[in-house]
Length: 310
Image (cartoon, rainbow, N blue to C red; front, side, top):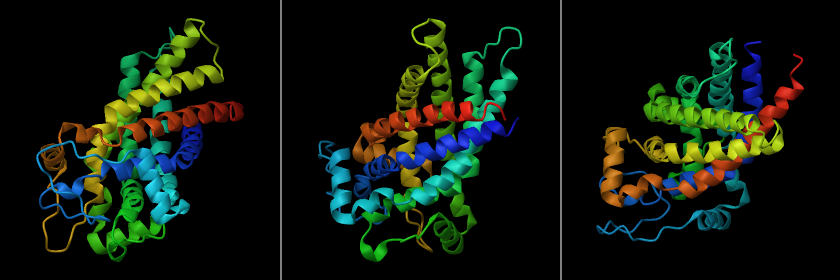
């Protein structure tokens, strides 16, 4: 019985991850915009960015422009760059967090009232998300690098063939510790996302059914998952921006890393690009989190129906 939640969550997460991968790729590319304006930062970029002028009015391309640019310069297949890492990440990270949350939900639901109070939902989400992120961080690093690779000059691209190739090459050239680069950020983001996403979905779904607005069907699942996606995106975007930049930084042998840590990255980003830089990629984040969360929970509910007798 305990493994059932892991299987259900894993299937739903992989379906959701693959189907929304292009939106995630666009989000990553947008989060890296403007990074070349930071002093002494050396992640290789496809083209030089105008130097920081103290003004934060430099126009940046939006998600449609970024997507169109990827199609023009790299081809349609580029929208699925790193999809093998996405599958691996969902298999490790999301399967773990969804399964653990389901286990805690069953254990922490009151036997008398049958209620799973919001504080317990949040606590379960924080724990499940943190553990899942620690397990899945190597795949997360590989995914970010594969998605960002098209921005680099051809001579400097990493050209990972797959998630397994990315991980093995990182270990050989940068050490095994590189697989957990940005892990503190990954864990923090995952705790925020999981706690906000899963608790919001359960709360909204229960409220809709309890008040008789709709039954426990597709309409309720879509409505609750959309709300969960917006809340998760709004709470996690700043951490996600910093995580993406730390994971993508190019560390050269014998040289200091571009960022000394997450706080250094955050401070330098805000100084060079302004506070709203922490919400770069927010529109594609919401655009991805909405469909991702809808596909995740709608698929999850259907998989639960299919496996209810097992």
